[in-house]
Image 1 (spheres, helix red, strand yellow):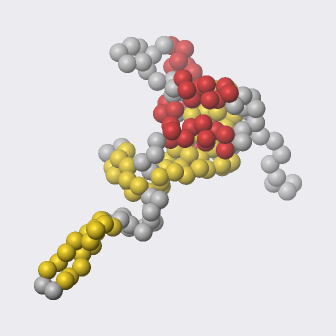
Image 2 (spheres, rainbow, N blue to C red):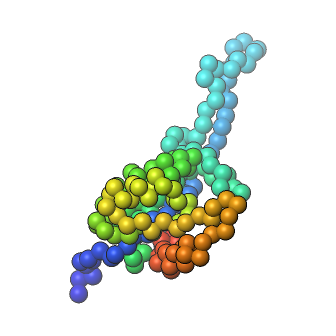
Length: 166
């Protein structure tokens, strides 16, 4: 009756998104005038005043900003969000993101194909979480029928994190 969340679901969905910096990306070369000559300063290149934002290239576009990994419950409510510079891969922070999400032991972590690796599956196992990472098609081979079914089953639950971004 008070709209309190009393229990966690059996799975959580995680995904990464890019967040554009609110500051304008700029690059200038600073100089100073001595007599009639312009001299370039010792450290001439000056970037935006948003020191933590970085450039990345994804889906054919350059973005200046941050990458955020969001963890949602089975209803799409955000449990945790971690943010890194945009040029940092979500894969380099996977273990940290899973740890910070404080997931219930035994919960299945649903993630897209971008996180598919043996190291990430092992990290989930070490955290006593169930692996819900979608499988990638092996290079030069067909994807197995069971992996296709597994991916389809995961995507039917994983859509909540995409809906949260929408």
